[in-house]
Amino acid sequence: MNGLLHPVLDKLGFDRKGKRVGLHGFHHFLGSVLMKNRGTLVAQKQLRHADSSTTVNFYGHLFGDERTEALQEVESVLRDK
Image (cartoon, rainbow, N blue to C red):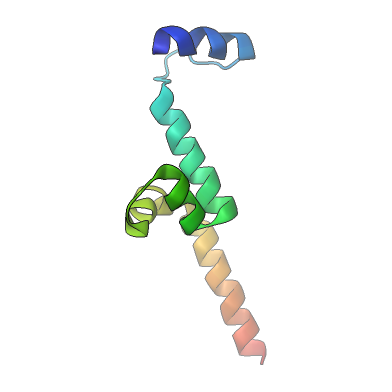
């Protein structure tokens, strides 16, 4: 499959020298983008995970700082009330 993928990446201008580039990377990218922008349930369905915990376990670690910031914002709102 990389025999088909690499020429496309080269034509698009992706620097893949010294990097392992394959379809798994696209799958991981898709999961990350979906989870960040559309939520866990959308990512779970698109990635065909039977359980949302699978999605969270694979992709949740990518958003540690954002989750911390979100919790701090909620805490701030609650403190102001």
